Length: 231
Length: 102
Image 1 (spheres, rainbow over the protein chains, first blue to last red):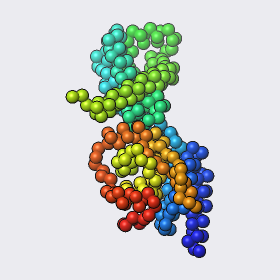
Image 2 (image 1 turned 45 degrees about the vertical axis):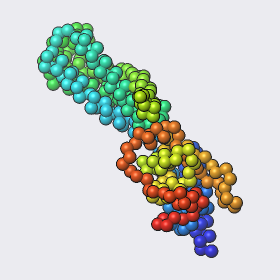
Image 3 (image 1 turned 180 degrees about the horizontal axis):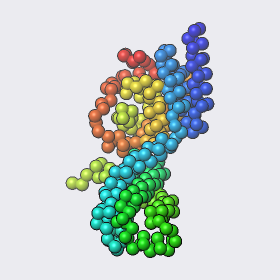
Image 4 (image 1 turned 60 degrees about the vertical axis):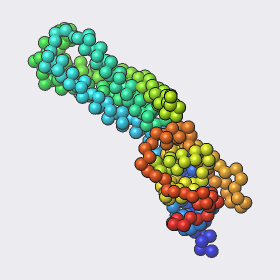
């Protein structure tokens, strides 16, 4: 009798917890509710209720995957940024050149694209969700944009006497009509930052998706070779 | 990883939650959130039992998707699955408690 009452309570608890799950997960509540009918002890029933509670508390499907993809790619972008930041410091403060280096700019752009593709590839390896490489690429692009703009702001303000000799800055300063080179540089950085963030986020979405597709292709080729080794 | 490996031991067969719990040593409180996450990541497919025992509800059944099999094949063999004899697996399928099960 007491067993029946306890079974009824656990059934109601699982039903309540099932109602608290996202609609796409409610069949899991049904699964645990069905298992209750096969449970032989109070302990088993209690553990099924605990399982239902834990499933109800899980983040909605996809959110955890996307969050993980974004945080991993943000970390990857921060690490990948180190040589870029060093390059910006060396090119602007240590070995300043009156002319922009086209080869240097191209190398930096290529490195950025490879970093964005690597973020997408990492996300594809971690998650089967189709949007994960895109989210990872966007996150990596935003991190690179923020770090890049922060580095330029730090270099321009710390080495103002050096960077103020750059022809582009001199011309821009004259055209701006401003009276302070520092104010001109900072207002220029503020005006440029949103555009840089948007461009890198879009590039991240595109190249993250490409990196994810390349990683998926490489993984399936590798898996095929492992299962059918050539003699 | 234990659950992936248990499912990969016989990837074509549909498994009950109870059977998986027995093989992996995981209790329902831990097992179901793992199954949900595996399904969310496209590594596990679920189905309902077609002919349940009389008077009992249909149970959920699980097996790996092709992506799940790929991941299980690529995973290191560091975590051995609890050994299951054919008789023990058959008892688990019928829902009979195993010696040592809490």
